Length: 311
Image (cartoon, rainbow, N blue to C red; front, side, top):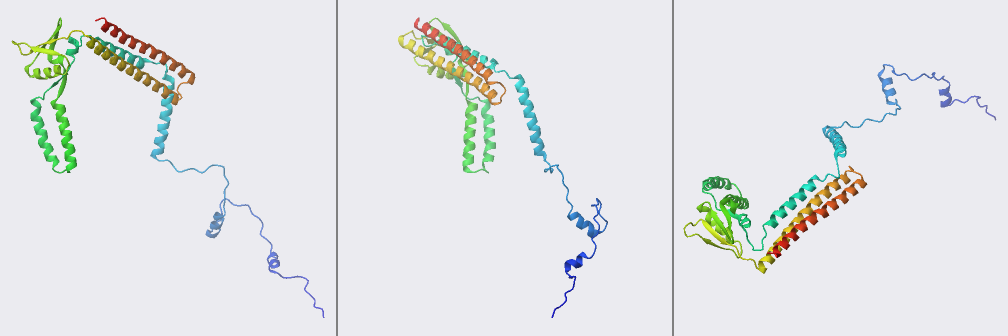
């Protein structure tokens, strides 16, 4: 028996397609005022743009960094306009100071061992002043009150610092020429002490010089007579050693001055303020100036040595 099938099949898809679809409408910029439609449309709304997203707004530190960066750039630009690798003003001044000091020191070196200028330049350590003792007592009283609330180690450090300050206040170093008059008298040197309280410090300073004998005037105890020792082979050799030592000190000062100038050129190189060719020429000029300064210093020492050998 044959069963006749229906000509049309009823399916859920066919049932949905039986109703006509609504016409397509363009997307409205402002959706309807209903709450449901506005929420659904805003959730699926997407916008395409090429503008990058803005970052987090900088604070005060970012603005300070920006200002500092601009300031450093401006400073480097100004320095690049005014920098000069051939400016040797500081270097030349240092060389002049080293030569002047060497000349002054070599002038004090004598084959006899001692002269009036050297004796006048001796350091004299004066005793403590009476006026400062009362002030020190007041300070000590206040320090004792403060020490009560401190630990043992802290109190010990405070005492050590106070002793150091007291030593600095009690001891004052001056030249012998500040407290006495020094006069050359042929083979002798006369020393006239100005005040009686300075006599003992002056004698202590004179005692520090080897092979130096002095006598006190019987009528005036403040007048001293120093006998300059005669020239000997030992005194000449000692004077030459002193001259060589002064020359080494001058050469060291010249090396320090050259190093300071090289550091200045190095900072220019790191900051890219000057080209490499210009820096190379400046370095050659530094070497030329240094060789000339060293030659002059050695010539001074050699002249002093010849003078010592001649008597």
